[in-house]
Length: 129
Image (cartoon, rainbow, N blue to C red; front, side, top):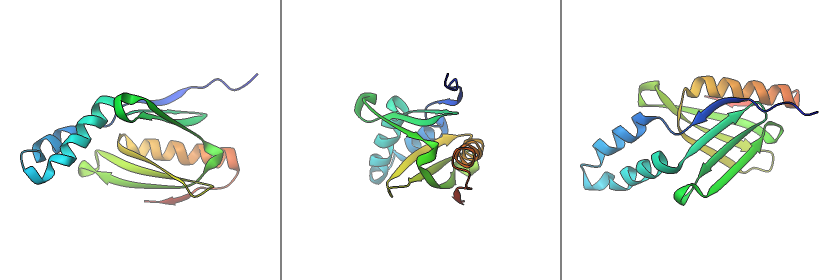
């Protein structure tokens, strides 16, 4: 029998990302950022489990990407919103990248992902903060 999949984090982007971008939307030049934040708030969902990282997004949440931990070779994180949330980039063995924007509790999520990668591959993941 396989290992039961248990969720570590399930949810959308941090609400602060939406609030800040709505405030920036009062200026015409920042309207594209505001539209992007609204689309993320409506349709972007993360599911990080002990087996994989899943991202559901795209127009009306119709696209889904799943990545297993053995495929990840590098994890980068960047704090946003005074460190309350952050962005992460997962780099795969084939060189492709998966971006996670406005992740709540991003430090905990980062630690969880790097721990799972190390446990699955036997190697420490190249971590860049």
